[in-house]
Length: 319
Image 1 (cartoon, one colour):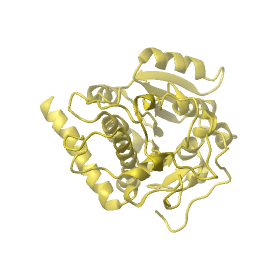
Image 2: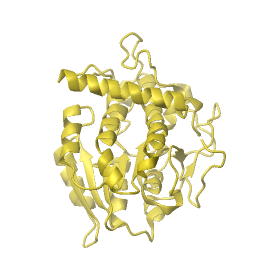
Image 3: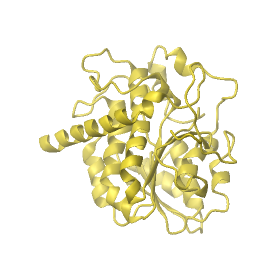
């Protein structure tokens, strides 16, 4: 965290369209994971309306193609196409990376799963960590050369206020010895998103790649919470709210993502955590805002980077 927090004229009720009003993104290329629905879809739509060439990564190619067709601006300079991308499948991530050609100006790591019942990938990785962090880590590092070629790229990691409830469990990331707890696994994966931004921001600054994380807020009508009905309860601390926080619609939920992806107001910011279109201050217990100290710890960030590389390398050697 910096001593001086970055602020903008925007806030919790600002929409993605309002953030990008008057901006021209013609000539810029963007990738948005999870762009077939929810705030990912609105992020992709807003970037395309501003003129960007957007590729949405979707696990379901039919849903991806349908969304791309529906949100492509009629007659505008921006376009939207879909590509298959299953973040829980490293083969799919590798194929997406290998197929990419040319520079990449914007990468929005938006897709995610929340509080799902215990499930493991073919590698034995816990599904929330594998999807929310490792898949995105492999995608971003795989596209590093394309981001470098943009000479000023931005990477946006969509985290959650849920990160405040737990650090990465470095001695048992995949819950092989600890009893599986859906919310603990979710918190771990969302902390990992912020730690990725901290370390990638440090490592990639010489390549002119800015990397920031964000909390989009509590969003109505998305598929992210589809597993919550399978969970008997969620931690009271996760559900705790302050009087100044309420639900957002999808257009408002995508605002901070597009702010970090394209607004000149965040030019030069990297390795930071935002919410409600402004850089967040430290988390205070009992308030559903702010960034936890464990999520911006540079030592944890560096350790997670090495652990993530090791897990991916083990996959490559055993494939």
